[in-house]
Image 1 (cartoon, rainbow, N blue to C red):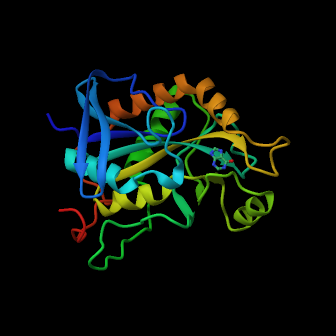
Image 2: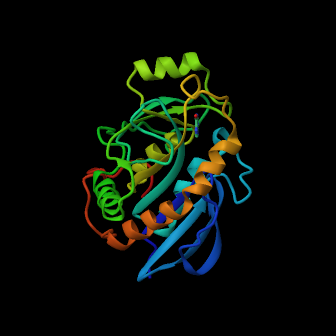
Length: 260
Ligand code: HPA
């Protein structure tokens, strides 16, 4: 059976413990090797990838986003649920809330943003996060009674340091609701590969200068851990309800020059 759904686990999500019959695969791509675990949930095959490695050893700016997405494409994946721990710039979006964001602002500096190195493609980014998967997530969160927001603008910072309060003030003035370090270029590469992609963002803290205390990675991990069962329930409900074969406007009408 084909594997059409993948979960990319971010900070605090290193273990595909909702899956059974798990086998590990190393996938060689033109951009390097990616490690994937493939298992079953109900009748569906699901691939799991730990974005930062199982020991959280790969920082956001050094993640091999191209190898990861290319490997999922090679496996036949058509739908990606990505998890992301995020800081909040928006007083309505509180720690432990889920956000199914719809837009991003890209402040990364050093990352390869495309698979295409010998041609030019200009991808449409009107809806970077798949509206069909976001709807499935919204309905799952409603059913489970989880605090959630259906829209949000994610600012992708380069990291790995946290932001200065001045940067957060600027991001807020530009319309940002959330800040994190990984969604770009992951979401862009998924679109280039013709894979629908949505993020389950979980607020772990108010951002620098809004939070009354200094930020630490431990605080982020602790909040992720406290909310882990809610995240698992949300992922299970959404995977159960996702029509993994549904045609989607996300898939570029013309094949991108990139991945055939
Ligand atoms: N900034 C950037 N990335 C993050 C944060 C933050 O405040 N919280 C969780 N990931």
